[in-house]
Length: 119
Image (cartoon, rainbow, N blue to C red; front, side, top):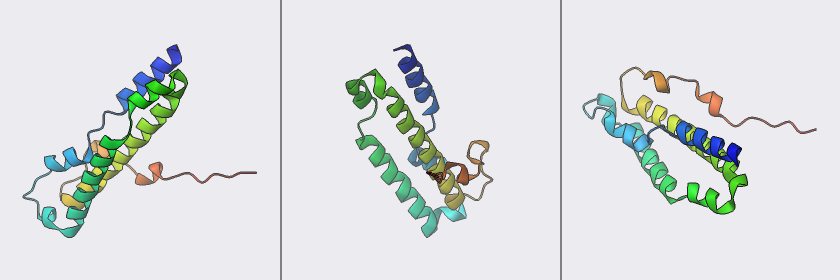
């Protein structure tokens, strides 16, 4: 049980990336890139993601399945954090002429699915 609590707390701390839709509101609407079709698509994708994120079962679902499902819930939260970072990075690149902030300056390939090699 102690391990489940540690996993849950670490996942909660790891999930502190703000939503891409919220990040989009922090960008300047005076930027020339803001009105481009690419920026509009990025904002729409962030809005769609925010809506989907509200609809999934979340932590309550893990509690219903018991302490052994906390690892699964932690993995889902980690994946959500990665998706938020990727969408926020995409939105910044499409909607802002400013340099990428330090938190979004990473290689997006690190979140790409890994190829599995089975024997």
